[in-house]
Image (cartoon, rainbow, N blue to C red; front, side, top):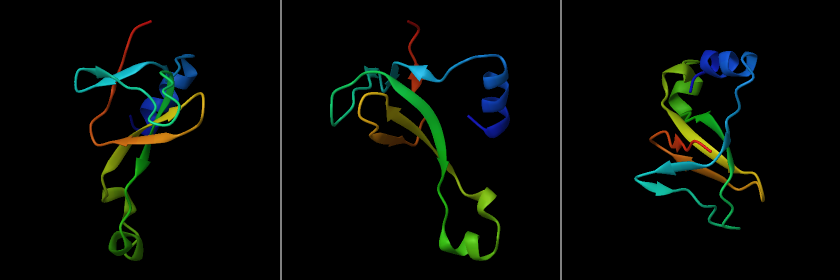
Length: 84
């Protein structure tokens, strides 16, 4: 999810909190085994692109932060939110 998508969801009152799955399996926290997360994304910067001030061309990773313990798990493919 990009910045504008996130902003639009926030303005509509939509939340990224919930349960997720990836690869056909429900995501569980590796630390506390929690099953609710806050979805986000992070820029994967490299030294060369930062030096040239073109960080925006780097890929983005998808993240899920456990709502119980705060552990952040990174994904290259976006996890799917499960409907509650």
